[in-house]
Image (tube, rainbow, N blue to C red; front, side, top):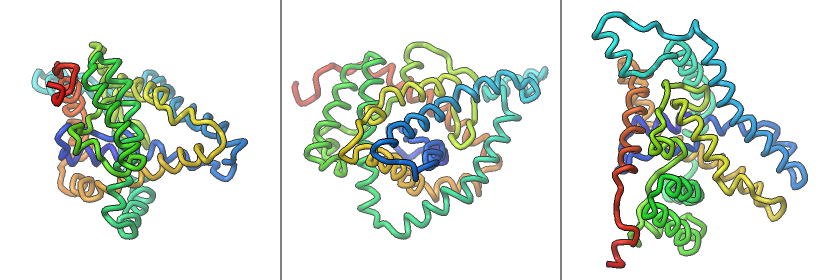
Length: 301
């Protein structure tokens, strides 16, 4: 989850992208690794994916039933305006989940990320980041299609083809130099382009900031990712596990300083992250809606 928070805190990427490799959310997948084998790996992986998606559904149901965790609507006009802008109906519960996640990260992902930075050279970390990004291009492609943006979908498809071949399996971002820079899209953004409202802000334990819409979108992304359907044999399932775990660690490591700065300098880190997340998601959805470029690439003209 702090992979996502760090990306929000940095806000450095030109396209406002946030890798929703879901940090600590995917870290849950270390359970029962000893049972992972060519005959049982698929079953274990299926259970983990079902548990992860079930967490989203269960979390939403729990929130809906926790009336004591609903922030009271203020009567003062100014306070009411701030309440509506924050869109944080479940703030009491969300803050508890945030504090829990901060504590877990402090003693788990952060030390691992610091060790990773110490042990792995920058060029290697960059190459691993490129690989993770390339492996996520199919999800971006399907969401671009769902949003009705054929040019963006074409760019994502070409990026995947170029980087998988010329980029040695995605370790080198050759497509960027060929005029196909990376852009982000996910299920939550696609639903936003369809006009579906975000719903209240949520902070999911070990997964980070979200909304009802983005939580549903995350579940859709898991269904769209072809890597969740890799067959047994040839080490493909092992690669899928390694790819997810390495992506979590690599992205968390890339934003160690960013998140530390938010925790250290922000008067209210929770509110800072909440505001950054919702503003960023809104801006990304608007960017997709307003991307009306011609279907053919620039070089064709």
